Structure formats: C-alpha cells, structure tokens
Amino acid sequence: MQLQKIQSKIYYIRELRVMLDFDLAQLYEVETRVLNQAVKRNIKRFPEDFMFQLTQEEWEVMSSQIVTTLSRKRPKSALPFAFTEQGLAMLSGILNSDKAINVNIGIMRAFVVLRQFALTNEKLTIKLKEIETKYDKQFKDVYEAINFLLQKEKIQTLQQKRKKIGFKK
Image 1 (cartoon, rainbow, N blue to C red):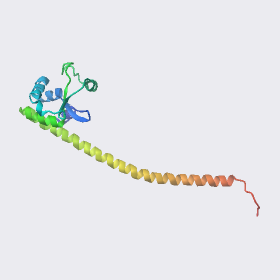
Image 2: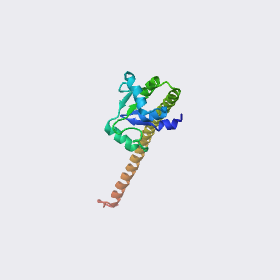
Image 3: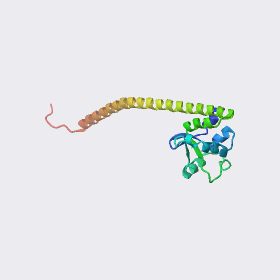
Image 4: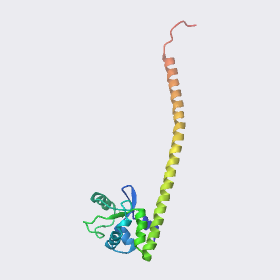
C-alpha cells in the first residue's frame, strides 16, 4: 500500500487526525455501506473518541476542500463517519480479510510517519523560538547602543548650535 496515497486520505477534523468511511471502503475494496454495516454490528467497539459522524457543516466544509467528486461515493443524505487512529485499529479487528490486514498495516505506518513529523516540527519550532529569543536580546542590545549613540550625537549637535554665554578667554 502506497504511504502517500494513505496520507492523502487522512484529514484533520475536530482537532483529530481521521479517515473517512468512504476512503477506507475504497482502500479495503468494499462498499461504504458494507464497511458501515460491519461497524454497526460491532458498535460497542467504537466509542465517540474512536469514531464519530460528521455534522452537516463539517461535511460541507470537507466536500468543498476535497477535489474529487464525492457525490459518487455517498448519498447526499448520509453524513460520513470519521475514524480516529484508535478507531482504525479497532476496525482491523472486525475486518479480517488479507486486504484489510495489509491496508491497516499501511494506515498505522502512515499515522506513525505523521506523528514523527509533528514531533520533529514541534522540536524545530521550539528551537527557532530559542534562537529568536537569543538573537532578539542581542539585537535589542545593539539597538540600545545605536540609540544611545544617536542620542549622544543629538546632544552634541545641540550643544554646538547653542549660543555660548559668559566670558570669553
């Protein structure tokens, strides 16, 4: 299973990485309704943090962002189900074909890659903030020194322009 193909089917909804039922059905090479029936027969395995149904608003936003024509993949009245990583692991327990097992292995690998990328990205962000803080302080010192010199220059210029009073020697 091609990792990039799987990664392109992972979406970010409700601050969770999820895969939608019709994409999973396509990967497993089954109909969406067959996948959903298997889930409904084993609904106790899928609490809300493992699987949830998209709201109409979420679905409209999603369908406007997905390039492919989704109308072919599902009836307009049915809202898709989203499976979190834990839900996908649970799904592997109810779909036992060789294809399902291989697809699930690929999906788990895709989630691992995404998690590693997120951690690397987080570490990079922290490092950039450290560098920014360090150099902001150094540049602040340089700016203060420049401002001090400019102020000193202004004072000298004002002193030179000022008419001296008193006795001349």
